[in-house]
Image (cartoon, rainbow, N blue to C red; front, side, top):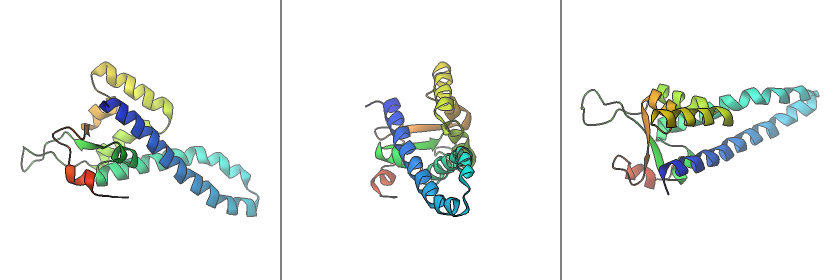
Length: 153
């Protein structure tokens, strides 16, 4: 399976994970909403979804190098910046890099534009180029085998 298809499947799997978080949040919020008869608060879920999505992708990609979907597809995110002390190694992914990568993942339309612009520029996504990150397949030389075999979930 090629890397692009793995990334698409991983994004769909991550969509289900974020949807599960949102379902749990709305279920728990329902008790307070129903008690105070404030059903108009459901209009705010459209603003909460981007925050949850960006936090999900940013925190997981920064801390463990992949989201749940990426782990299931055996791919991970790495920084292309070089470490200052030893030029042969790559610097760890920063929160800024992870955040920039996550901006277009909020809804379906921005990610499609990101991929189209990335294909035009010769990358998979334009925000990967801007954030100076790369997504590696398990067969690539920079893939961390120890990370992929350990269970983080």
